[in-house]
Amino acid sequence: MSSVVCSVVIPMYNEEEVIQETYRRLKTVMDQSGESYELLFVNDGSRDRSAQIISQLAKTDSNIRLIDFSRNFGHQIAVTAGMDYASGQAIVIIDADLQDPPEVILRMLEKWREGYEVVYGKRLKRHGETIFKKATAYLFYRILGALTNDKIPKDTGDFRLIDRKVCDAMKKLNEKNRFLRGMINWVGFRQVAVEYVRDERWAGETKYPLKKMLKFASDGIFSFTYKPLKLATYLGFLLSFSGFLYLLYVLYQKLFTDSTTAGWASLIAVNLVFNGIILLILGILGEYVGRIYEEVKGRPLYIVKEEIGFREDEEEN
Image 1: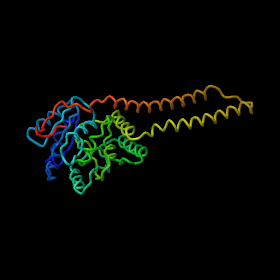
Image 2: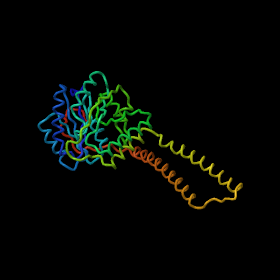
Image 3: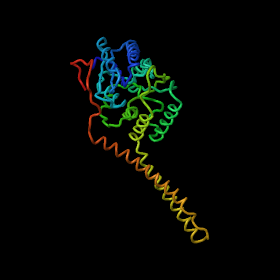
Image 4: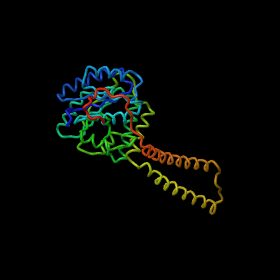
């Protein structure tokens, strides 16, 4: 059994402005916990000095581990790598930007000691975020909840603690387009929320622009429900029924009245609507087919360029 009780996984991407403060606060919290621990920093292809800073800190702190990717593979893959390498009996996932307060980890550990195997952070407020970001996040979780029958807790992120049993179960899930908070919920086990107020970034800029937010949202929806595919059936039935009614109306005008069909405007409008819906359905089908294509290629999730802080006698994942 590992001598490490708690592994803290910290994915980072261009976080040189905040990473030293992140390390200081995490070290303070984990020292207060009274448990043996390791800090697993995963450098997701940063172009700044994030990896070099952690590498220097590792020379003076034996609790630090660094997993340095060969390029940027994405946040969810970086977290996955951290879980693959974690040796603790409890694994905490927290971003490097300090929006999720490290001090909440102590409350998570308390719940874990009570027997809970997943302790997820639930945001009561989100400071330092735009109205657009808050509104879209609120809308995303409600849409995802409607599509998945509320199986995934609302207003939660990847900030959470998972037990070793949960981590081992997650290693069996090899899909490429990963939505970890949904996957952790899917594996089950005893779960509980810890509420907190999310802070604004301590320094630097967000690493989730609109494009990445849309990609993340699509991963959450398309990875955990096939209900968008049912849209084709529902819309097809609705349009066919509407077209049949319109046909009856045209026949009625032709046979029982002296009026004639107006002309091209209505016809073009109907064609545009129908063609737009067909393209929408093809786009949804393309999303699912594209994900199948990614899965069957069988490529590794990530490639590690360098590992720092891992003892030779520890099992490498």
